[in-house]
Image (cartoon, rainbow, N blue to C red; front, side, top):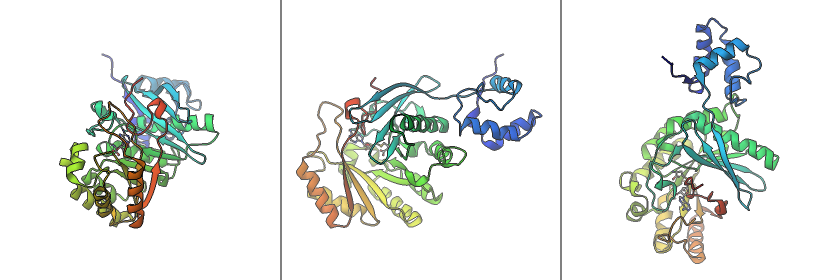
Length: 346
Ligand code: SAH
């Protein structure tokens, strides 16, 4: 009978050390292999040059390395790069490299498809197939770091969990991936350069606060009026604004970290002063920043970006109330790499 080989990267360093000990080898061998797997991102056991041939063969017989494969890379006219990433079981997710003058940001996926059903988002049309494993998230970051060095001569500087999926519905694996990304035994990046973006799962926001995580939080709000939000983000019926707000207050009381909100203004949906004032009222309890994101059309025009006047109206009302506002231009639109456009089209 053929034994199903285990994914070696599902083992912690301690487990790897014990494995080698059980094999009659030195636990230290576990450290060496661990370094190959994470810090050096080895794709095969063959390349582990400081490990003996017999040991490599033994690893080969027992384990697999389920490394992702960048199947296709597309480059936008604005420099943005989109990777179509093939997972070991053949499923595909997308990740994006966004360059600016001073930074390179990786936008990574946390699920294949998405658990949520936001009406304006292309990813929502792919049903959620499965959660990504920590190594699959980590590998996306490594791939983008490589591309950043190759095409922009600098390492990756920032990471946002704004690709496919709802990270707080795959929290355990996202957290494990971030641990690896920030660990000196992985990529050694500062957690301050990582933002997890969520549509707002109150229970998980409280959990993050309790665990005193060091990365940033962004909330995709889009409306601070329950009725409107539920109509465009139906899961708001399950997690209404009051619960979200209380969870965010708790988050702020624990972390004292500014909260970022993502917000698209659509014509006829939330382009009124009443909607803008509701937003002010929602986020005033803590230092906040609102990113007004440009809408990236995904369909036949059910949703339309609001006018420049409406954006200005929001900006004025928010600033007058001491809330930081940035108006974000889309990047990578021509290759369907912008917010809400990730849908494995190619
Ligand atoms: N599920 C998480 C992570 C996805 S982040 C979250 O909701 O935060 C992707 C961001 O792009 C979210 O803020 C989302 O609301 C926004 N978005 C989705 N579709 C969009 C579109 N068509 N145009 C602009 N932004 C969109």
